[in-house]
Length: 187
Ligand SMILES: CC(C)(COP(=O)(O)OP(=O)(O)OC[C@H]1O[C@@H](n2cnc3c(N)ncnc32)[C@H](O)[C@@H]1OP(=O)(O)O)[C@@H](O)C(=O)NCCC(=O)NCCS
Image (tube, rainbow, N blue to C red; front, side):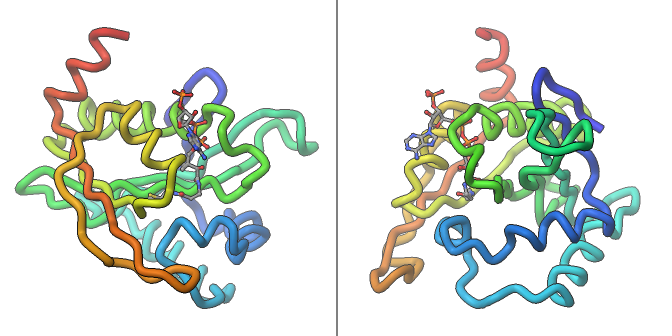
């Protein structure tokens, strides 16, 4: 469990599926991720099972993002997920993923706090060297978030995704461990 001021990251569990299914097919959220067709419960169960398979050197490490904002009877509620995928333990890198699937809480700083917790874990605990991330060029929120966290734009894949009738570029970001440490020194 990774605990911040307002956000707690807890390892994803099969028990999170009910909450995830409430939001998973929201077209406004899916507009920003690579998903066009409906996600069924069966498919989601398989994905969560794969993400939770664990082990000493897992390929994926995914957390549920929890906040206490008084919107449910439980103390904390899940608003999204974030994690690292396709981890390469020899070259020490992984690919970042984040989705705050409750869109009513976008732009409240939860994405920033979640990724600050995740990056600290990735660089200080796992000892990885590099985090890569891919963002659709029209995703203003995610672009702003990556720049705020010190990610460096390393290139653009042209016309790499087709969304709502148009092709769009994909922005490729990277963050190295020394760049991360430099940024947090100045906070
Ligand atoms: C992208 C996402 C993770 C951002 O999380 P968030 O909690 O909304 O972002 P934050 O509130 O922490 O904002 C981070 C910065 O981005 C800016 N920002 C956020 N949304 C923005 C938007 N739509 N347009 C412009 N800037 C935006 C904020 O102002 C903030 O910068 P500041 O502190 O300098 O003001 C979240 O909106 C989300 O999950 N969206 C749907 C799925 C998605 O896009 N995933 C990422 C795929 S690469």
